[in-house]
Amino acid sequence: MNRILRIGLPIINGTNLYPMVKPNRTEIKPIRTIEKDGVEIWNISFTTLDCSYIETVRHISNIGPFPLDIFANRINYDIYRAIVIHVAVNDGEEISFSDLKPYLHKIKKGDALIVDANSYTDKWLSACQGIINTDDYNLNSPYFSNEAMKGIIDAEVSILAGNFPS
Image (cartoon, rainbow, N blue to C red; front, side, top):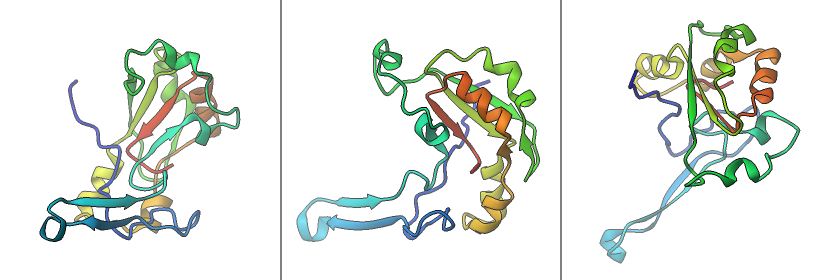
């Protein structure tokens, strides 16, 4: 199936999807403008928690970053083989180890794992015309059980992405 799976949100000035964790907001401001400087340059500042759900192993495990040998055989260090898992969960439901188990054996050490939680973010964006109430969005999100996260860590995933904040 060739399909685009959204794993992020639009980057909008002033956004803070995780106010319970951090005070910082996304900041977008011009540094240079075509009118004044003949060139357009922008400063865009946001934390790793904003506007996407893409995590490195450091965010999901206390074992630290993977050794460099995981990445050494890549032709390009920024290209990852990815396994995409489509999970039929409703808002606020747990993604269990049994939901992931049929796919985890396909993961090779250092792969990316992308989890589609029933198009969670797309449904929210459609329902609210692009302005998400972050409290409801975060609190009603599907989430990984402890056993599911252990399975992801044990599969030695290097990047975890999804279309929901968990």
